[in-house]
Length: 371
Image (cartoon, rainbow, N blue to C red; front, side, top):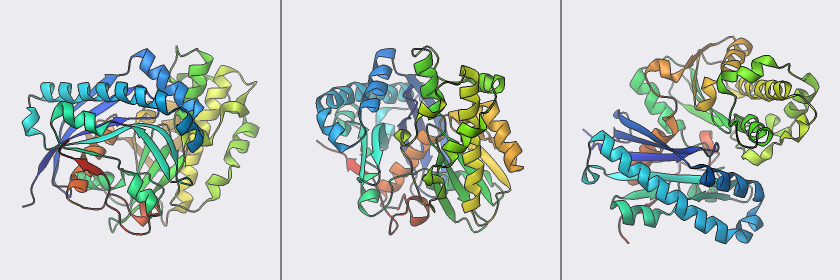
């Protein structure tokens, strides 16, 4: 039997709302136990700092020009993530010495596979110094150096979940975060993964600007249900050349803009953007060799009933929330980074040609276990 490691995974998504933390136990292969999940929200000041700096950064030049701001913000974010580590250890009744490693992804500020840059705010040295636990970080750089697009990285974990739950194949995991992405697993347990489109990001961005940060998302899709889809604007979004690219392919949240919905009412704007999210997810199936028999939704967007219903209606495929399979869909990404941290420690690949376009199977993640 392979050695089983206890790992904490940390994830801060494009919603910029806080830190997801998970404890899992795994051998980096098929053995998988989900121990505990915990969430810490960012305070409003930190959240707004992240959102504002992301809007300023559109290329590597902007990263350099804002380096002092980024350094200060990185320290603040890291301290919050250290707090998340300490809290989840406390509530799980583990001790620091019982945790083998931390998968520390950090907060993505800029991602461009063309420039081979994926910038996360994550001070791994500080994390190790404060927790005295081995830290795995910088998961995307090596993949990009070897010709990959640096994302998505969760597919290998989706594969582990599918084995744990004995899910019928072929199946598709759809993660609807800021960006939506698909992991397709066929009957031979072969992965195919790529970004589908702008998941929640455009919806959330529009609402934050419209409400002066008082509304962060469309709860349950309530606004989308009240609006009417503007088909002309929707087609303009769908005409983006990204949707014709052959996978593997990846997106950054800045690849789409809310400027096209200028002039629409609040409800019609949200309805149109939500339809865009659902359509791009279902349209992505054209790149699969066969249709999935089941769609499993993860990420915050799974709670949007408008998007959920439209995916089911458009695809005519059984669609379920991963929560119905007794896995909390809010923490799949943080669990994934605990899992791929274990694989990184064991020098096992975390990305593949079929998932990121990397030229050969790629291990990932730098490791800190001393300073």
